[in-house]
Amino acid sequence: MASKAGQPPLPPSGYALAGASGAFLANAIVYPLDIVKTRLQVQVKRGPADEPLSTTNTHYASTVDAIRKIVQDEGLLGLYSGINGSLIGVVSTNFAYFYWYSVVRGLYISSQDIAKPLGTATELSLGAVAGAVAQVFTIPVSVITTRQQTQPKGDKKGLMDTGREVVHSEDGWTGLWRGLKASLVLVVNPSITYGAYQRLRVVFFPRKASLRPWQAFCALSKALATIVTQPLIVAKVGLQSRPPPARQGKPFKSFVEVMSYISEHEGPLALFKGIIPQITKGILVQGILMMTKERMELLFVILFAYMRKMKSEKLRKVAEAAAAQAKQVTDQAKQTVPMLTK
Image (cartoon, rainbow, N blue to C red):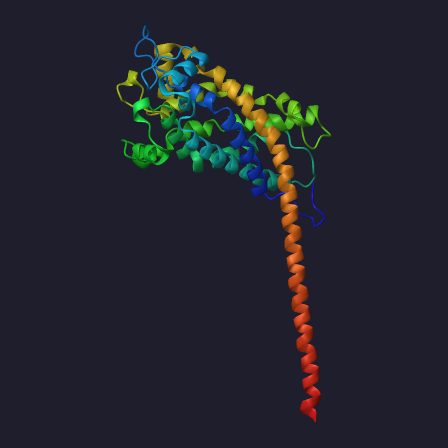
């Protein structure tokens, strides 16, 4: 939908702000599930017969067991450990993703001679490009947040202190980009999710400009994306967290090493550990995000339209003032000329 002046309803920054606002709200609501799935995913066995232990030297048997033990050991606030860094990362990642998605999507559409709906492959490709660019700039926050979520009770640190801990490790500054390769591969997750969401909207709700809450939750594309990419998600968390007790402080060097170690010590199914809270969180976040983004876009359309109107009125007033001043100068000049000719 274009405005009367031929402008798009929102610039890329408007779409990015709408997406980031929805992501902030959604992830704040379900954050306890995020920390639970992270704790479950960093559990690694010392040997085939041992129980897997997290970086806090605690074994979590399930999602409910993890919630119970975290509250018991760290209090209710333990479920929100690292939330500041997480929300900063969520907002920055989603802002970058939706910004670059709208940019590359707009460029692609404008380059087409004939306007037609984008195919699924095109939507996924555009989403992957946007996701890759976003990850390069925002992964340091993800690394710091993962470290905060897996810190033991007596060793809790703030965002900056955790960042310094990462930098002062054996990786140096490059430690802030730990798991970048896995993250770049994982761009297929949001691209599958968002691309599938766009296609499902066209198929099931072709004439609706915005979706109702239940309609947004019908697009459960996040579950499919999570199941497909879960082994990489587990490997990425293993790379970014503190070295597990089973490794005696020795960090993993690559996501392939993480996957190999887990498969060897716990079996291939362990690559899907934490999938229940991961999917639950993903579905809730996706539904809230897409539902909120639709409405936030409407709010930002109104806001940007108001700003354009105010800018137009301001320019009109400036133009009228300039015209009045020019007229005054002209009138003065007309009065001066006859006096000089006398």
